[in-house]
Image (cartoon, rainbow, N blue to C red; front, side):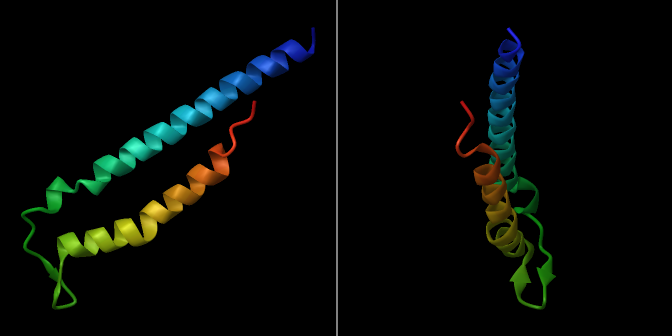
Length: 79
């Protein structure tokens, strides 16, 4: 009888982790489509357009950190 609440907690915890991972990935997809930078004429460092700089930061830093978090948190999901 005492192990039943623990099993229920693990199931809900795994579901919450999965939901958090899905929301994080969806948020990254939305950020990846940077519609607010499409018409930005700013140039950084004298040669780098803001859209390209944003892509470098997203693809080079933010997405790898997100993937690291996703693999550490949700792989494998506890049964």
